[in-house]
Image (tube, rainbow over all chains, first blue to last red):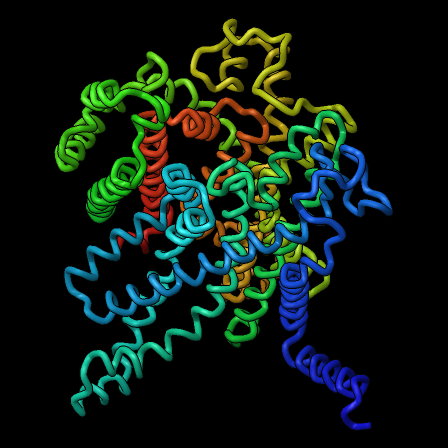
Length: 294
Length: 338
């Protein structure tokens, strides 16, 4: 009986509420965020099973049918099922946003570590460049990149990734500067550890924890940039199923009252971004006990 | 006073490398990246000779370093070149569109402050209560709602269903812009011209776009105000004020909020980047004839000089605003000068 699913579930709920009592509302914000993300990720993974139609199928029913039993979210002007397009569209936005965040974190963290550790003119120049990019409106930079590149998954991922490199760079560089002065780093240097070892074994593990929160928030932002770019008709070819592009297409039907074409893609973009932001918010409050005192 | 002056001079000098780097990035993105502006402009089937001629005309056949030099020199002379599509100087087009964007961002920021700061202060005062959590949740959610989607939803509700606000443009059909247009800032122009019927029309057109932009940014300001207020509320002078028996509401919304406002001011400078990005999206949704719409229109037309010019202007605005905000900060808070 001990290993029955109900007992396991009860144990899980028990553990969850204990965490809830310990950390308060922040814990529930984190859980809510995680549930939203997991829900949408599994929707993307099992898209083929969940979706009643193919997202490209132009013969699913009447044109511009309002939501109903047959079509949960209605149909668009090309007689495609909006619900199926929403489910398959999750793949594009999740893939691009997560991949972009991974790329910018890898590049940003590496550059931040090296820059902060080596110091000198190199550090100064790189910091100035990164600060300038950081101050510039990210979306406008991404628009410029996406406009110059051939539309495609790789281009849009690149356009989104570029604008977040400074975020990681600034964070990691700042941390590296502080940790560099710590006693244990000095001790390592005293016993003759080479720079690479100090960077890899002493500084990197201490920096990486703080980037977790930024990464989560970053995915949330990247989702909005991806959707904004495709809403503007940039970055992806029309053959890809994408929420932002569906939203832009539905916009044309707003004056004639076909509300479902814009409502559902937009709500999904918001929901996904809210999920990552809540997860990040919860993580940052729980990982940083000083904030909890507030 | 000497300190303040040297701070201002130092800060101004620091703006130069920043603008320079931003201009370089714009150049790299628009000119060095793969993609051939001329052939894409003329279409795939243009003869080689025509393409070469057009490149010659635009100076695109010169070595990159020369192009870069020319580009910087052009900008120094405040010349952004000519449009590739229309017989127009880029700077004239921008001068025509920029006021619309500034008007939109100004009123957007106003709404952000009116919504964000009081809510943030209230949340800080009622820390860890239901009101606090609901305000913070509102902050998270509104931040995550794409500004263009919020715009579309407001258009749908107030423009289509209730039919009380127009959903596109800066003025309606019954207003003749030429009768009051003077600076391009229509709110100002109509007041100067004393044409209050036109002012009303301008304002109802401005309402939905600026509410859209303002609400989206209000989330950030709630968070900022709340965090700053919490720090200030813990300080001794607040305790002292309470101890002297000043009414709680007065302590929070006068003494504390005034002190929390200085960091909020600096953050306003940083938010200009987000505000600009939001304006680009809001403009596309509301067919607002500003810089963002210009940028996208010209991207579809592949008008590279105009694209470059618009991004350059955005870069300069961001640098200038952060300069001005830092100087105001130094004026307000003497501690910054050291």
